[in-house]
Image 1 (cartoon, rainbow, N blue to C red):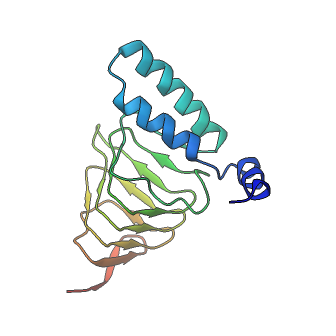
Image 2 (image 1 turned 120 degrees about the vertical axis):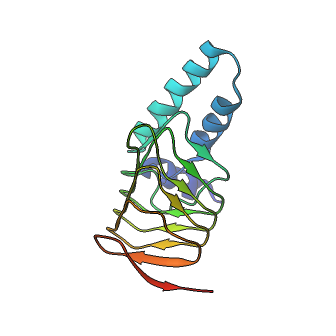
Length: 154
């Protein structure tokens, strides 16, 4: 990547390498004070990028965020699988300290809301603006409010 491209990405808030390094260090930290300091720095970095990632949220891999963290809220109780694509203004929220568990290879469209102690299967596509508050099986495409399963690939 060219220096010019790096500067442009950094100025737009799209360069999240530093954020993910902080996230991994914060997850590995054993000492309470060190973990608190790293959590503070991670929260400030996420805020700078326009989003929020809870300090105890679990990412099994680094998700693809095509628009950076802009408007993304991830609950501290959420679990997100590998190779997920999360677009802008997505909310992965909690109800009664229970948050969604998202499988691998999922795509979550812009403005989608996933809330409560639900399970999203592997290879699920969630359309833009969908509000999901029920479990979704593997290999589905989900749209609308209330959620409606369009197709299931077997």
